[in-house]
Image (cartoon, rainbow, N blue to C red; front, side, top):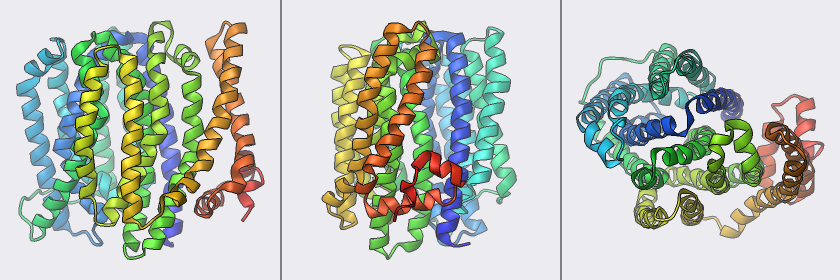
Length: 500
């Protein structure tokens, strides 16, 4: 099977797996949110913030090198496993020791046991990283997503929801996450069956540690950029406020991250095999960025304009205040995708350190802005985050374009149709939603009509902007549509996808 065919096959399986996982994740999270309310989710959110940081340290980044290496030996795997186990164990121990002062920082003593219990996730995720990246290297996204879907299903459907119904509160969320992490570890290892005897010595160890260190530096600053706003909200506002903010943010961010991770991994795996062909890399960057915005831009623009209806329909009236936070974060997600697609290009071109160098001053600006915005209200923080995402995307895209010897005009040409399509969907949909809310009592009914209207507007808009698509974007869309059934191609693209 050719590299392109294998990559497209991986994209198809990855898309199906990501979509299935997101549906299960959304359904379980909505059900649990309705049962538990913002206060219980706020306590859990504190644990998520802390464990998220610990996971980045425990994961270290050395396992990502398994994707990039042209050949991987058993010694490589054992060495990576040794460091993953060491760092994951150390971070888990530190969390247990430091749980009380961390909880006191957030003014929430009930978070102590949550942090201690979730330390298990650090060890599980560190070990899972080896199997996960070996699956990504082989482009076996079918097995990867089956493991992720089953892990989430068992953790949240079989454990989390029954415990919540029995009145266990935040403990149901903690137990669900632990079970999910352990199930994913077991299922991914079952497919890969890599060597399990760890070692901390390896002839190529120094180079692998340097690679991991560079990835870790970028990941830590990325964690700060993604979480510093929630840290300040958790410090300055009530546990209910952080529950509202984190739930709205995570609903958008986690789904986008899952999809972005899929696209990044496929692009990185394929591009690393043509490292000397800068022209091919430029086409990949333009095609993937432009085609992603065609789908993702209108989706999040629609969610932003109907945020009140969406939040009320899914979460109920007690989550109403989350709608003010939901809108700006939704508008930030397309920017998150675009900057996320620019970052791998820097690593492929051997300029990965630039991401960390850019992110350090951005993190300082981000921290100051979030600190001052948190003096007002959580929704002011959310609008500040949107502005900061725009700044970050502009800087990272400019640096990636320079590394690829790509003119920014070409990049704008590739992405502009997606931005125009987003407006074509967003503006009329806002009028439709406003009208429906005036005449309908059911927010769920409004959401269904809004969804249908958004699909119709997207279909019309796509046909209007197709002629202006960049050739690289058309190539990606044609390659994608060629692997779909004819009826589905017509339903999504009409006859436009067949235009050369």
